Amino acid sequence: MNRAGATPKEKNKPLGREFSIFWFGQAISVMGTAFTQYGLPLLVFRLTGSALNLAFGQISIYLPYVLFGLFIGAWTDRMDRKRMLIWVNILRGIIIALVPGLALFGVLNVYWLYLISFLNSVLAVFSSAAQTTVIPSLVDKEQLVTANGRTTLTESIAKVGGPILAGVLISFAPLETIFLVDSISFFVIAVSLLFIRASFNQAHPEGKPPEKNVFREIKEGLDFLRQQRIVLCATILATLANLLMITAATQQITLVKRQFQATDQQVSFMFAASGVGAIIFSFLVNRLPRRWGFGRIAIFSQMIIGILVLILGSAPVFALAPLLSIFISGCNVIFNIQFTSLVQLCVPNRLLGRVSSTILVLAFVAIPVGSLVGGSAIEWSGNVGLIYQISGMLVIIMTASFLFTPLNRPQSFNTAVAKEAPTHFG
Image 1 (tube, rainbow, N blue to C red):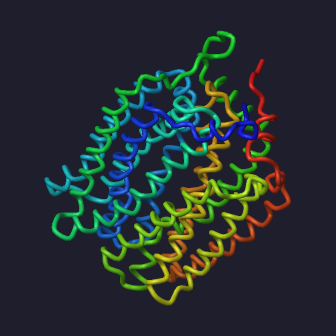
Image 2 (cartoon, helix red, strand yellow):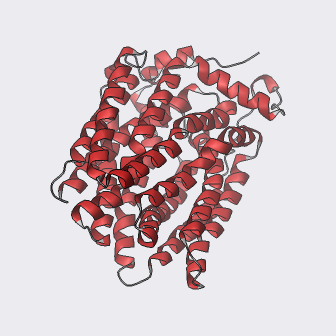
Image 3 (cartoon, rainbow, N blue to C red):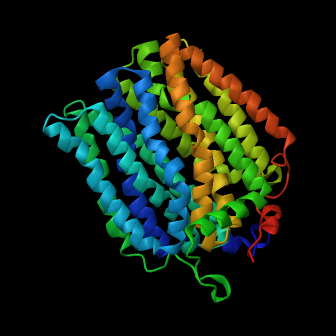
């Protein structure tokens, strides 16, 4: 049944016990992750004071997606996803705990941070591929947007509370100690998964056994994505946006530290402002008119981000930075919720891990390049605001070009796309 045919009763049906347990574990985990997302770039900046080192930090985070994403996605579809997620979270908890451990012995440096970020991200690839499959296994298709919106709302609340609490914590404790919160949160989610009875792996159609050749599995995921014109077009949009916008996302600390001489507490406030925007727009996303269609919402949300980043690069006072961050984050939320729901709706569960990983690889392949170019440009020019302005202008021009693609169609969010989705490859 598609959403167009769902009754109000179906749409308002409770999401259920299994989803609630998963949601609880995620809520704890994302709060800890918010500590790390705030603390890691700040720690790199404290150790080096370099925009280029911040760029290398982002490269260490996203490079594993590019190197291993296709293979990990294929393995995810053949593994017991729940068991895999449990072990992945345990290992991530151990790895993140290395930051305060190394600092305790006085041997922590930026190279250790790069290595820890890289290893944590390798595990995060497994987690990202598997977690995309979790929600469709716990709720009905008619509830996907609501469920994804709820998890995004939780992440957004964590993005508000996490940096604020971390900012308070580092006022009387070493910065490295905040990573303990993230470490503990991974163990919490691992335990919470033990209480979920539902399987995260659905049976293959017609009793078809799972493919055992990893390269054929990858090809099947690539073939499926290639046939999904709208999803593929949205993925290309996300890839180009990442290429042009990763500098603005990575160099926020550089911007406010150099342009406004911001304190660590002001930095935490700006990070929290991004979370506020995500919370507000998480509530608003379901109110967007369906007649606009996913494509147009995606295009215009990215175009607005470009405009806001252009303004941010010209901001004369610090007070404008958190305000603009609210709307930039909000537009990102709109794009991400709709995109994630679209993928979950269109892709058969047996292919969801590898297709999701393929999308991540394509979307993230541009991030290391964009990070390196942006960080180098800031160091070369010495003008971080100018680089923000150039990035914003390029995003506006790039996004406008998608008005002439199949993505700019006022079709239904789900029905038109779901109809074109192949369900079997012979």
